[in-house]
Length: 375
Image (cartoon, rainbow, N blue to C red; front, side, top):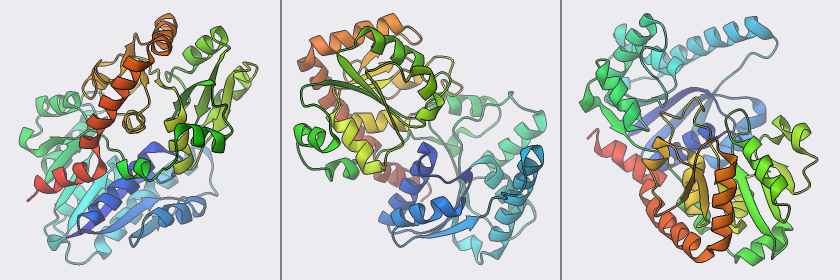
């Protein structure tokens, strides 16, 4: 099967969504699909993306750089729509192939192509956070047409599906599949935790707590700083866009700001940590829809997980696999962290159960589920 994968998101492998797209493309090709990826990117990131897309093709939609502010934003939007449309028009025999769409702009372009009768277009659309009633009625109407016109509409939570169905989207069209994880990437890392710590320059006996992911509002960084100051004997590492908080917290001696790390090195940090933190706020914009890639990677690392107690998180894991704390409560976060430190056997048992459970969420399983539902 030939798949044309269109995304209107900017492809940058330091971002979780870009890694998810690349992993999906690779998983489709592992199922004997031929995939061409069309995406927004820059010269800086293009070679990195191509290096992990073995034998795949990426068509780059350029981003205008010479404009700034409001003008740049509007020109980039118009340019994105036009280039996606031109790519779609240039593809021959679309009626025999499959278009996979991720992102609003790309989905609108596919709907327009279908409405203009450019052949019979078969497409799958994946949207994660779209909630009817939050935007203008016209946008809701367009979105409903996009979802109902697809072979399959993919989202990552039952909450999102329920909202779509209540607003006129066919239940039979919607497939709920959580985010995925590359299990093989973890299996390919060799050496004991002691060996990995030595390679990374981490003391063998030091208690290490790691947060890896986006750093910003409602991500629990203030809570991490709070417990770091109260537990100076523990080393806390932040991996991600640390420039967002470096000036505010760089005087806390046991907080290490590591910045972005290449994927393999990131996984090594996850494996050799004692605890992995996911202190989401219940005010995070995606709280009702989320299926965090971070959680899947944490689970695959076989490291104890301390995570905020949110409904969408409980859709994936239970107290059998992780330790929950009350979201937005740094005192409960510290209490549960101390509990894990004092109960390593129970925490490690949970971690092993978590690693076993996450196997059902591999990218390969995700793609097989999609293909099974369109055949």
